[in-house]
Image (cartoon, rainbow, N blue to C red; front, side, top):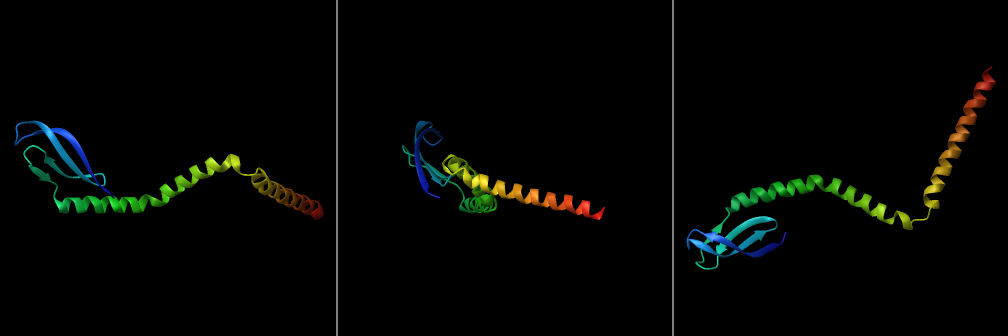
Length: 114
């Protein structure tokens, strides 16, 4: 996760007016806010940040297989028009032939018993 910095205008309780502030992020989480006029800085408790990061990390680990599967489905769908049609037809032909052979064997076996 990358650290980010953003400039926004907020109401400062120390200055008692709207003034520019610098907002610092760690990944997608707020780390601190500093007033550019009076230099007052408000920081988020590090223990809380560690807890949030741990929860986020565990969630990312648990959802990784699902996210990878979805990415693979999208990749195959994107490549589908460029793959040779025979790649899909041949396995189907083989399955049909196997089914036909098995069906014949079952049909002949019933006739022999009679």
